[in-house]
Image 1 (tube, one colour):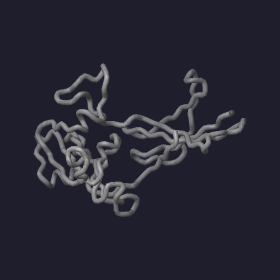
Image 2 (cartoon, rainbow, N blue to C red):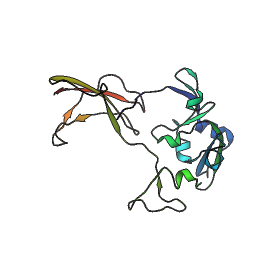
Image 3 (cartoon, rainbow, N blue to C red):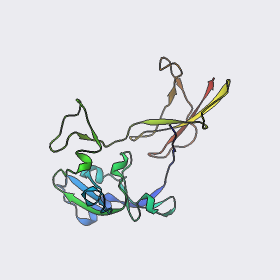
Image 4 (spheres, one colour):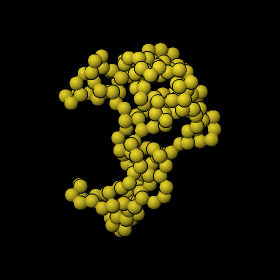
Amino acid sequence: MMGGVSNGEWVGAGLKDVLTLAGIHAGAVSVLLVELDAESPEEGFWYALPAEKAMHPDTLLAYGLNGETLPRDHGFPLRVIVPGWVGSANIKWLGRIVAVSEQVWTRNNTTFYVLMGDQYPPQDESQSKPVTMQVIKSALVLPWPAESPAGRQRIRGYAQSPAGPISRVEWSTDSGRTWTDADLPGRQSDYSWARFEFLWDA
């Protein structure tokens, strides 16, 4: 897989603070987030965030990224950042927020971005269970093309968890029969990628 791993520093207002100032009712169940892209289905990408997650202190209405005004490609003028949740919850170009006292169903939590299969039966109007939290993941940092000469190598990579800091990384070269601890150098910020490295005798 070719791809990039990075950390961004978001600046904004807490969605909880904005909803509180707007007078959100204690009985709110869903917070509907609607983007400004009128040409997308539903005349704007809609995402229904559970009220509990909307009121989480880390859920952010971001207007800045890495010390600068939020770029257009990243959602200017306002983007929702829901740490630990999949990208569909982090909608760009936010135009409207609606708090309601019942479950809101949109195509993005009934047909798209849902778990399907025998283990995930339909729920109410939804075809299946909406995808919310990310999974634990890791990636090795290798040159392209990824060729290494024989001998002792220092292999580096990054790991990330949606629910807390990475406390341990293990690696295996025998399809998981045996495992060895990797080193975790450096500092890890909340919700960020943790760097790991290990020595491998190729």
